[in-house]
Length: 232
Image (cartoon, rainbow, N blue to C red; front, side):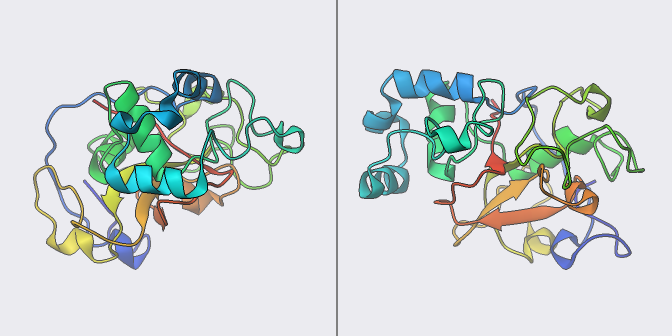
């Protein structure tokens, strides 16, 4: 069940529909800074074979050499090796996934992994529960280390799909997409201005951490509450 019923959620989550997805695997956890460092150390920012054409153009235009916050002392609270890699644009996340022989999830794949088959509001069920994810008002203004909330696991055991960091998806954003998308393996619109991100974040309100909630940014966005995980 993708999306939300009429009495729940925002307009871009409607209509709620049953969709069907081909089998896939998704990372248990968001990509961490320690993992992303392997891409940096392997020269990933200098190897165009890992980048899409618009991604390489973006990388070249601003001379990217690594995530936005990494290596800067004033941001050390964001960039521990076990914290989710943030300050990474969609294009960087896409290149890292290709480096591993993986890719970013479609929006539909992300939502299926987060909520299972029963249309639940949160990965763990329909009721908000303290201690199941990070959210606005925490003691540190940063995403916690990955894997800290085992009681927030999805029906498939996937962790950190609420709170932590918003996670890039491959889809271009369109508020009306759900009404017209195919019922099998939807990929989102063919073009757009914004890329979808899902899952809420450490600075999001509880209702923003619902599994059906949608967000989107320009693919060049590199924020402290925005990361990713991969699929294959």
